[in-house]
Length: 66
Image (tube, rainbow, N blue to C red):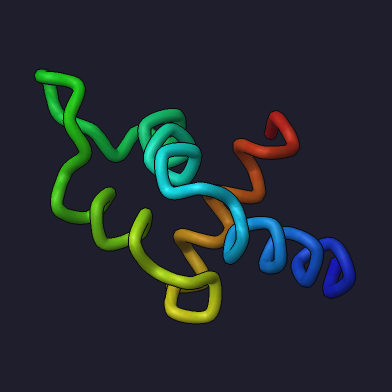
């Protein structure tokens, strides 16, 4: 799992911002207008290391289809 997490960390830190925004929307961090919530914005603009373990787990689960 640690190796998989490291790969996701590298991917997260180097993907374009608009893709991070889309991932956050897929994870459910958006409002009824389709805009990112304050939490979604904070996550989208953070590096992987700055994310909580819960946010990392949600992103990883969505990425793997769990």
